[in-house]
Each structure stands twice: as C-alpha cells, then as structure tokens.
Length: 297
Image (tube, rainbow, N blue to C red):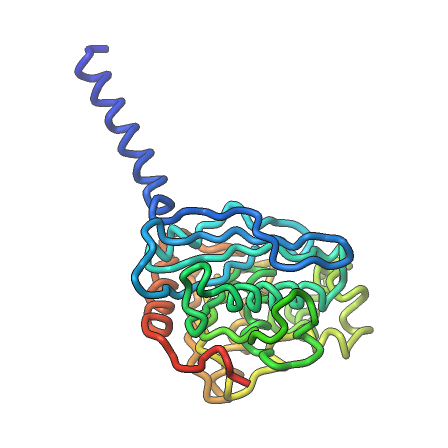
C-alpha cells in the first residue's frame, strides 16, 4: 500500500467518524440529574443542552425510551442528533414494570416534566415549549402524557415541583400501544401471555379492565390535547399498526391536530431515514413561544 493511499484511507475514516459524531457536538450533556426520588430510589435524566447557550430560551423535547416497560435506558438516545442544536433534549429513566406497576411509569414521566419546567430558567429552556417523543413503550408513555394532562390518577405526587404543570405542547409517538383492551383481538389467538401490557398493570388486561382503561391513551382523548405526530410500520408484529390508526382517528374526531405516517413494510422499528418528519413536526409547533402553554388544564 502506497503512503498516499494509506493517507486517503485514513482521511476517509476520519470523515466517517465526524459524520457519526457531529450531531452530538451541538450539545453538552448533563448526565444523571435527579428529578425525583421514590421509596429511596433516585429517578434520573440526562439533559442535552445546546453547546452555545442561546440568547433566548430554547424548546425542550422529552425523550422516553422503549423496552416493553421492563428494559431499556435513557442512554444512548438518537433524539439530540435528530433534532439538532436548536433544541434541548431530556432523556428520562422511569421505573420498570418489575420494579413498580402502572401508573408508576407515567407518574415518573410527569414528575420529570414538572422538574424541568420548574428549572427552566436554570437550564435555559422555554417552559411554554415542551414536546415529548418516545418509541414503543416510550411511545405509549408520551401518548399518555399528551392526553392525560390534569387526570388526577395519572399525575402522581412525586418530586418537589408539584406547583408546575405536566402538560406538553406537542407529542411524537413511534409505534406505541394506545388501547390495551383492543390488543388481544388485534394480536390474534396465539398471543403470548403474559403480554408486556399484562406485566405493566399486574395481571391480564381483560381481567383488569379499569386499570387497562386508565393506561390506554385513547381513552383520555379530548379537544384540549396537543398536536400529535404518530409513526408506525405496516408490518409491525409487536404492536399492531391498527393501534395507531385508531388513535389517530380518535384524536382527529376530537378536533386535535394529528398526523399519522405509516411506513410500508417496516416492522417494530423505523429506518433512520424516516426520522425527518419528526424535526419538521416539532419545528412547526415549538418554533415560537406559546403564551401560558404550560398551564393548559
């Protein structure tokens, strides 16, 4: 191998590394921030802030990871790279289903929102421009976050910022379940039991109708809900695409601005190339301040 060729290969490798890591250069990371404690357990999030602090507060998007409510972690996350330097991103851990049953998970997520809103000035974020984005189990939790603002049973009393609103102003959900009671029919007779949804609520969904209903975002839809972007693969064998189709229809019927994008032949997961609509969605709804948006009842 000639020296020139070796140098060319080294430069190509360096450029490839730059391509991989450039998105995160737009952010500085504050890791393992405690947003609440419960039963001696510290609940933590990672906060990605623009490297250069802007003159004006920036919008924040809460990222909620998937993993069937029983696995997963706040790191790593592709959300900061997908949204770019104009956004702050908070990637949140929540109690998993083997640690605590529902509604613990949504209580945790709402506590994180209240903490961030209460510390908005400290972090340089706009408390009136909060979005939420999640996939799979995280998609379920952000959908529930968006539809249950003010629902007492789902608010919880965690953290030191109970005077703050847990409302968000825009929600993007990737292939999350939204109607627990419809899942059995949609998954078919050979559904493996217990389903993750069974484990989340502590028993078969058909035997725990009240809790399964409380956990279903579609049951909380009303005209005050924020705009939604819903994305789902047509060949998803884990969470049927019918869940997102019905949820989008319910939102639209209530007069909520909802966009459903189904991705042909995609399974339980979406290609990286399909993330473009997410930034455009948040740009549309979070690009300018909204007066008193955090106080939506």
